[in-house]
Image (tube, rainbow, N blue to C red):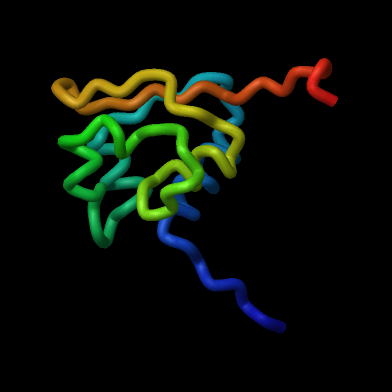
Length: 95
């Protein structure tokens, strides 16, 4: 049995996917404690709002983590250090 290598932001994906809420608010401290207990949230995530962009083209940033879970960043507050994620809604007219 081949064990799949865990990716850097898999813990974010797992947390959001199993949360079940339509909106999730996390503080930077919660990210550190729950999702990155060994390394902490990357420094650029605390200072650069672009780190939180819903852009799958930059895997070094965290977008893969929340987009793979079906969420997008709805609000970033660097000063108060929190993030609001909204569940992505699928539209029937796209199919």
